[in-house]
Length: 249
Image: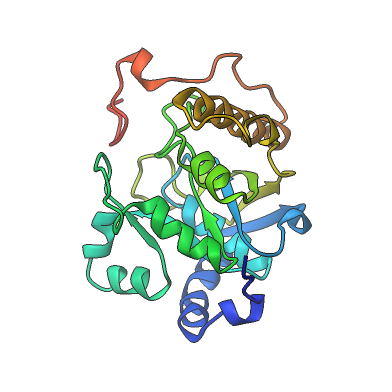
């Protein structure tokens, strides 16, 4: 597997974007990073928790501070937004159509594999959307991250952060700019996927491996918050909730 050097990743386009985004993030928040040295060289999948629409910027900044550039599986609709779409394409982000079955040319996992082959970092939110849990604990996960990891034999690195909801509350469009908020980010050890490495690629295999990922992400968030998550992970379907879109209060 080829490995891209960190310096070669930070192209002119990336540096221009960083010159815009990083000062904004530093204006609204103070960031404390734990265990950035756990991020490996070469290809890996970062799996953060997700509770605010500003999360992608926080996660992207985390990788940037570690000397890497972030690639996301992003909603395909974002690629049709003027300026934003051009920036997403220029930085190698991966479009994904929700609910669509991709062909060999458009499957997001196929697209992500090309990034993996070049030793890059791919960010996948295992919950797929903002958590529906009332207290913003990680909810039930989806299998995209473990499918990619098991099929390409690359590590999944769990990640959790807390405090970004003070900058931009869940489902809100109103930023709180002042005073600066404290945001903590922690990186975990690689998820142990060895029990499923040679297992048949079935829905049961992917579900069990995804649960291991969510357990590790939740444990990291418990450490940041200093409290215990609910014993049962939130499942939107059991509470009559849709998978996507803003919840009605």
